[in-house]
Amino acid sequence: MARAYWLVKSEPNVFSIDNLAAAPDKSTVWDGVRNYQARRSLRDGMREGDEVLFYHSRVEPMAVVGVTKVVREGFPDPSQFDPKHKYFDPDSRRDKPRWYAVQLQLVSKFKHPVTLASMRDMPELEGLPLLKKGSRLSVQPVGAEHFAMIVALGKRLSAQPKD
DNA sequence: GCCAACGTTGGC
DNA sequence: GCCAACGTTGGC
Image (cartoon, rainbow, N blue to C red; front, side, top):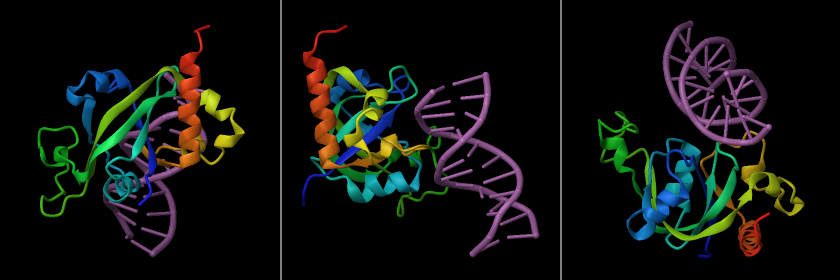
């Protein structure tokens, strides 16, 4: 099967790309997603080796800040079974887990972010779920061409001197 | 901090 | 099964 591409959102106040870079193996379990549409991507869509844009939300600048990859495919999110955990779900059963996670590992961090504003200015990125009004999904598919474009933009930006 | 967009819940 | 009320997300 062809490699697929994705985007995950994170609030850097909670977990930033620098937190990921500092983590053991530069990887983390992407847990806590409690949305059925996003679950479909985590459980049924994302495959080992798929590449994932890492997006910082609710912060200035909102931007894609790097690339990660799936190093472990969808597995039951452990936090749903932990009563002390913020993401505990009392209705989920171990023999029939409700929520799934993947493990993500950092591939590269852009030296300069590809901002939401700059992406909105690119007609070629029309149709990217992130840019749709009211887009709240924390895990989204990204087309191969859009993925390549954003990564190229990130690399070009990172080669330019700062203003 | 505001509020539009959206998902979920629960009464009926 | 409908839909109003409610809670959350996340750009602005």
